[in-house]
Structure formats: C-alpha cells, structure tokens
Image (cartoon, rainbow, N blue to C red; front, side, top):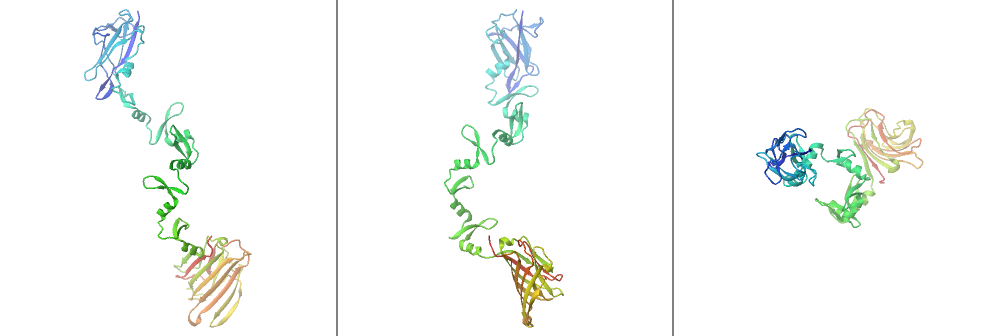
Length: 421
C-alpha cells in the first residue's frame, strides 16, 4: 500500500485580477467522468472522503490530498474541479498523480501557469503574494515597491544581490570612461568615445564650421555665417575684437586708432578733503609710461609741497628734484631733497601734467609741469625728479600733501598708461 500526495493552489480571476481563492470547494473525480474519487486527507490513517467536494482550500487558496494504490491502479488519472461562488471555476482533467502512469506528478501551480493563465496575466507581470493571496502585478511595480529606488537610480547586481545605485555611478563603474567621453550606441551596444569624435561623426562638419543651436537642435554652419548672425555688424569693414571681457564688433578704423592711443586705467574725483591719493596694481614694466593729469585746490591753511611717491616709499630724503618757477615775481630754480611735483599755496588751485616712467638703468623718474594761482599772480612750475636708488618695477603711485587735508574736495586725478600690450 502506498499513497501519493497532490498539492495545489486555486488561482482564479476576479475583477480583472488574478487571486488565490480561500475556502473554496475542491472536487476530485475519476478522469473524464463525474464519479467522485476516493481521496485521503493524510499520508497515513484510514479516513477517506468519497463524495464531492472532498476538501476546501485554506486561507491562502492552497489544498492537498492523497490517493492510494489499493483503490486504483497506476494508470488511473483524475479530474480536479475548483469552485466558489463569485469566482471563475477551474477544471483540470486527466491529471496524473501516480508517478508510474507514464507521467510525473505535478501540482496545479504548474498547470495554472502553463495552461490557464495566459488570458489573465499580462506580459511582464509577476505573481505577487500580498499576505493573504497571490495577485498579478507588473514587474516594474513589484520591483519599485520592493527596492524603493530614488529617481535616476538602477538595480545593480553586486555579485550577491541586487542593490539600488545611481545611474551615473553604475555607468561610470561599468564603462570606466575617460574625461570628455560620452556613451555612444554603435548599433549593437554602448561604447565610450571622445565627445569630439562623436560630434565629428554625427554632424560631419566641413572645415571652418561650427555647431549652432537653432532653437530646436544643433546644426552645422559656416563660422562666418554664425558670427555674422550673432554680432550683426552694421557696416562693411567691421571686425570682431576681444575687449577684455567679451568679443565685440568694431569698425576696423576705430580699432587701429584705439591700438595707437593711451588707455585710462584709473580716475579719482575727491569727495572730501584728504591727505593723499593712491594708484595701485600697476605694472610699469608692461605699461612703460604713465601720464597723470591733476586739477587740485589746497583748502588747508598751510602752503607747502605736493609730493609723488613710488612703490610705498614715502621717505622724502630718498628722492631729489630740480625745479624752475616763473611768475610776476621773477624766475627761480634749484634742487631739493624731496619728490615735489608742485608747491601749492593755501587756498590756491592748480593744474598739473606729469609723465612718469622708469629709465633704462632702473631709476624712477617724473616730469611735472603745472600752473597755479590766477591773474597777474599766475606761476608756471616745472619740476623734474627721481628716486635716488633703483627699482625693479612701478607697482604703485601716491600723491601726498605735506599738510593735513591739503587735497581738497573737487580735486580730480586721471591716470593713463601709454602702451597697450
């Protein structure tokens, strides 16, 4: 005497979903008939059931039973019917349970998937157990629910299990691209390739072409056409020049004129009485010559000198100057130990023009020409000076009065450089 177990699960469609049916009737008949079969509820014991339905599914839609070879020979096959009101009835006929009947025994799970679910489960669906029964669900939804990925993440197999990882990290690890490379699909797979090579292959530009975005996509176009469209020159003989910040279109005659003129590099409009004015971040080695224009008034009660210092050296005794002064009182001249560019009387205004440079031997030099006072008292001052020791460069200039607040409000200073690199 031997008994053979059959196990199954009743899956049926309800409301367009595939579910495992709990507490349903399971009826077992002899194959091709409505004759109830003798089945047992356990592998041992004498209790059997011979009237349909012989058993019910459990809360998960599962069931099992046994048949005995003392009741039937090994060629006997069976019909199994699963039913419950409100659910689709399932019938499987000529099911082999005895393993010697020419077929291996198999469960209704196999029969369901192979023979009866193609009209219920969609392509790319899985059977997902939801805690009480199986339901069909799209594979994307199942993976999303289980792994809970963030946007732009992939499922990556790390050798043991699937893990969630950002798509950039996965692609970088897998393809190991060099800098300035892209992933290019070559018709069968993706490969890494230099971006220049990809653009050249895709757009196939001729020499002197650019990639221009036309508002929808990139197109190749002759560089001259792109520049004309972008800068929109208004007349012939215009060229494009870099002005230190960006490219601009200018008339070629103006460009030549600019190239041969001095460039203003700083200006100061004095808003309150002060002691000095500084010009910094200079490079005399590159600029060669500076031209400083000054209009000034001395509002202080002291008549004294206005000095010119270089590179932060404000020690008067490190400089000498020679002067020639002419006015209604006569002509005077001499040499003094300071870097004076003008002697300015209290309450008096003046205008100065000063040329500044470093000579071939490295000595700082200046030539100052000024006019002060008014009317018949007008005085012309010529003062040329130098620093007693050499310097390597001119990096800063200071104009400083020897009296406090000697540079009055409204005084103006403009510094030009003579050379454009």
